[in-house]
Image 1 (cartoon, rainbow, N blue to C red):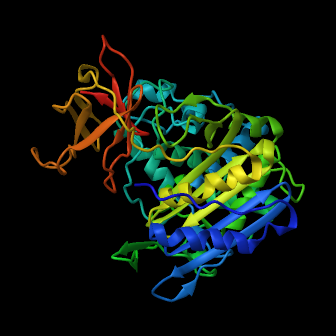
Image 2 (spheres, rainbow, N blue to C red):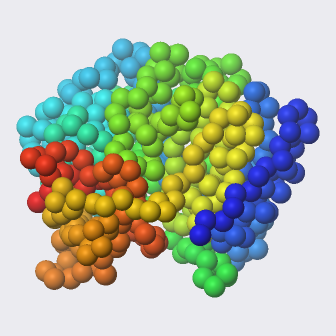
Length: 466
């Protein structure tokens, strides 16, 4: 059963205080096993922030609003900004083939590699496998070495055919920026994003992070938080989200520039209004996902009762950041947690807060239908496979449930990762797990039609029917 949401008592004007945000966190966090959290809001030119709990339970370090948190894939939006600055200057065009600027970009399907454009990479429509996390060391050459290794990356679908989340595409874009500008991705972030916006509470790697107050990830067992022992990730993946850390208030400052059509709150220009609008344009639909409704350039997009919202989530070693913006209401909300159930915490706090501040109804994660509809499994049954995962879909005897067995094709034949997960129809070709198990897909969709059968299973990544 989903816990009832916390209704924020957030009136307008000066009475909307940091303490009220702290109270929201204090009420919600224990229900979701969250050891520490920060909630920050920018609305109509005013900013508020509150913190709760511990940043590091082992060190008994309190969580504060200036504590640095790893932002994971939110870094992809920062990389997208660097690319759009190149577009503003006429150095690249969104529809340039990436090989025009990076001839070293090669995929297992050489012809597909020739057709992949910058826009494809920015919108996760390049079609190639994007979840290889090989370590190429800590040197400045790590991203270039990663890009060279993509010659082994399989093609999952045609470039531009559909959305399939691709970490590797943003590593390629980071390498593009570094090569065209000279230097490293980190140097470009510092000079072309941090400096114009006046950002200080940002660390681009572990060496910088130790100079700040930091949050660490936690796993909560029987109500007791234990820290996640690993601190850093792969240098090659920085542009996709492996290294970047910042305070929630620095995330607010970055987002304010996007709400303000490319201009920071300090009046400095980050992007042209045209490029900012392009980042908020719905370039591709995201099939039946809780990830987003559509995808722009860098940003995930939602249609909330006619209001366009944009944002991005990031996860890293037990921590998560969830960011939502509604430009027409000059609103940004940042929620960061360092353990527990981040999505449930978001559902408990953020939609009610947004509605109270703007009147816009932000949906929560959907729940199970009370009376699942019958399913003609002939459209869905079969095997769907990618380089890292194989899904076998079979009908259950009740005629309303799909049984989905997940295996890893890289493991010895016959090795299964557990009993089948049970899914019922949520709407159309989208299914929801009946009893969600951590580490499994809450939502699955089926995409395409080949003589009445689905072509892909989609869970933010596309897996083709075998």
